[in-house]
Length: 514
Ligand code: 4AZ
Image 1 (spheres, helix red, strand yellow):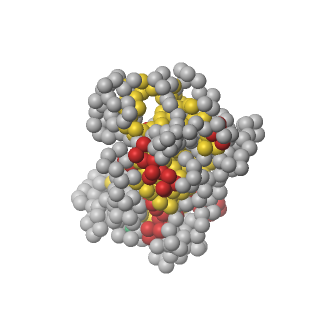
Image 2 (cartoon, helix red, strand yellow):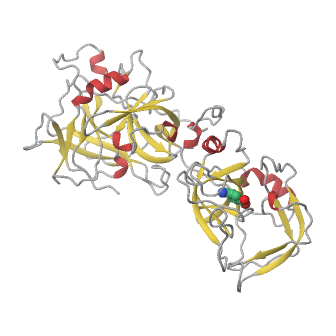
């Protein structure tokens, strides 16, 4: 299998196929070669648009498989390659634009993540990338296929099987920032390939991606709305239902069965306000839903003062469906508003559309009127995602949402009017932006945002969080009306003098992060 653009005609006479070859020059002890009996170009190959850039070459005679010559599996038609899928491209092409591979021209490899078609269209010009193409590359540039790699494979590994997802096709230059390489999408051609091979057909294997594709919420001017629908799997009918009250209520977790002593991997739906924030498709931070349109997280999730909203997407509705953890949907980001204090800043992420509440999608309470107390000994939890090996922050192999139980502790000689303290916790990088959750009455409150700096903890025995009552005005101003706890909605809210203050905290102490 190769690319159609490598062939100016279907004349076979001048072609030779080398297999088991390592170097283009010098000795290749494991090499076998064949002439070509037939060249089949895709009938809809369009040299103007590069659409359907695929070709099949029939070898003049079969080759014997060896340790150096083996067939790759091909991505089946129903394969899914989410944004970020780890991929490898191999070839003898140029090592940078205009620089050919030096002697003895040894086969090269490069690792590149899949970049979703929506984002790839936005980067290359809307309309450039058809559904028969798949893109891969890093936005920073520096890793790519290049001239001479054409026709070669892009592969991804699944359960120890290498599956070819793409055929090197084209790109604007090589390894340029924001210009990923473009590949023919092998999974689009299962039936075409099979129609030309009668015996000894290739092995088509379905490649799957876990979770929703972050690319589905990516957009830019001129790009049609996403046609990607939410997962076909639905929550089981046995899950409890929560009827939506006219006035939104916060801090309700109908599926939460957390009891004192519980910590660890969290089944979906347990903390219904938990969201995960993804930058360019890669899990970056935890966060919480505080209203239908706002997510609260740490300012430290955003490295630049003016984050690009187009790079970000928010996954909501973490739940368990048929024993698989997944998110109901991903939503784009309309605005990222970072508080402007000198330290311990928080960030509000405004979503492009409001979220509908479900059992497994609920807002957490914010104690904006500072009327709740969380005395020493109160049991609290930090919920957050481990940064999984897939970089998605979640997958089916256990690196999902987990929580850590802790309890409110005395701040000792540290001012407790300024701080809230808990027993020490093993917070990790993936917990950045995640909440410290404590129950007051029947409602769950977020009393802190995990915001870890690179400095080590000042005290190992307790976790000190700075009270962020100073963000009360910022929150009210930015978010407006917030849902209230069920108890106060019935009219028995305690009346406190300092109504604008928020009992909301960010830890001062922290973990060392990579
Ligand atoms: C080429 O000319 C070519 N950066 C192949 C791949 C890419 C660019 C050019 C992708 O064969």
